[in-house]
Structures are given as C-alpha cells and as structure tokens.
Amino acid sequence: MKTIYDIIIRPVLTEKAVKDNEKKNTLTFEVDMNASKTEIKEAVEKIFNVKVKEVRTLIVKPKPKRFGFRSSGYKKAWKKAIVKVESEKPINIAELV
Image 1 (cartoon, one colour):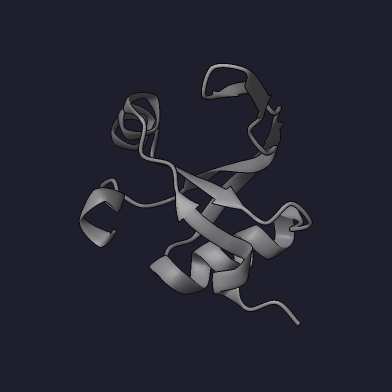
Image 2 (image 1 turned 135 degrees about the vertical axis):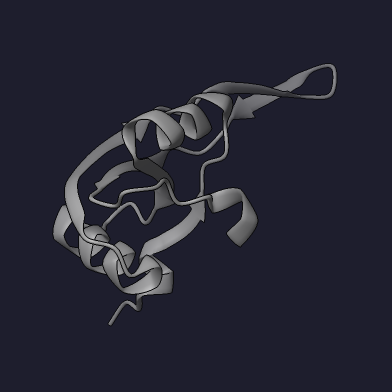
C-alpha cells in the first residue's frame, strides 16, 4: 500500500509554478507515475490541510540528454500534478521544502 509520501514525490518549484501558486492558488507536484487523481487529492488534503478543488495531471515526456562527448541518452519521463486549492491565501511551498 502506498503512503501519501509515496504518492507525492516533490514539489515543482519553477517560475511558472510559483506564479500560478500566487495568482491561481495552484500547487504543482511531481507524483508517482501510477497515482490516480483521487489518490493525489487525498494526499494533498492530508499533508497541507486544505480542500482541493481540482486535480490535473500530465506526463512529461523524456528529453534527450548528453553524457560527455559521445554518449547520449534520455531523462526519465515523470508525472506532474497541478492541484487547485480552495484557500483564501496561497500556500508558500518554498518555505515548506
């Protein structure tokens, strides 16, 4: 059985994710590839004590990466979850990390 900390791997702290957190009250996470939207919703509600309005997920495709001069490979694919919460003020994820 997966725990809530197995479902949510880490927050995504990019400029776009932080801006969306401030303006649209959304939180962005890297989640387990096999996690469903309901599992993600329950995990976020338990960890942050907020009510979740909506969960959107997408799979980020692997991108090419170079290892030195001759060899190359790909970064791994990962699943991103964008969670919209119903709180009055935005949750500052950067302070929690």
